[in-house]
Length: 223
Image (cartoon, rainbow, N blue to C red; front, top):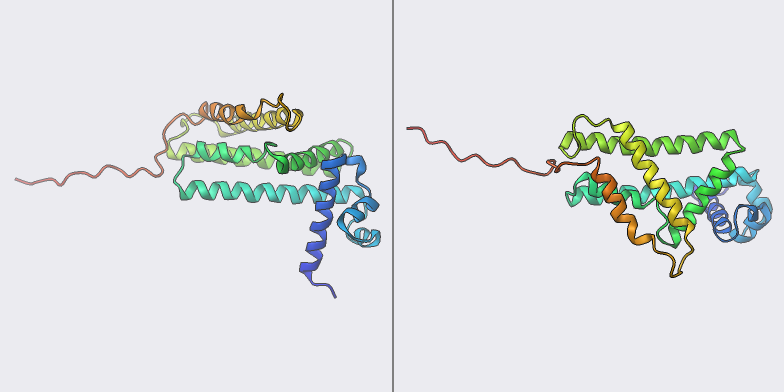
């Protein structure tokens, strides 16, 4: 009887094969037969784990989301360890959603394919909607934390700020993806970080006091 770890490994192999096919040839190239060949499995084994194309795409989308989440958590952990302001951490986090290298371009193509497929599938659309809500919620939490530590003005509403920053991130991701790789015309990448920092600066307007120690008061001498 295969161990649970074996099942998870096979599911990851299938998800990787789906992602590879989408990245290289587009969503139309994803069939059970091609996925099986790319994953080095039999058609029957692939069908044992996923009955439909939508199920394979959903699992690939979740695997991509998990990889992005792992990198985001690593960015946050590194920011905390190095006592960086929330705005700086958020700038690093937001770049993980932008296709700035080959791996992230492949991931972005999977998420785009999923979003396109979701237009005609209520089940996939619900997951796509929830994923977008989760991103806004995480950004809103960062804005709320910024209010607590002094980086964000107390009067700022976290939700509208989060909507704006999420929209900027998604818009930049699309603009970068539209540019062909490795061509002289690819001029958007150098602007990504400055644009993100500029947008974050409109929300995170103050210094971070989270890691600032209060000044030591000199001892009082009684007469």
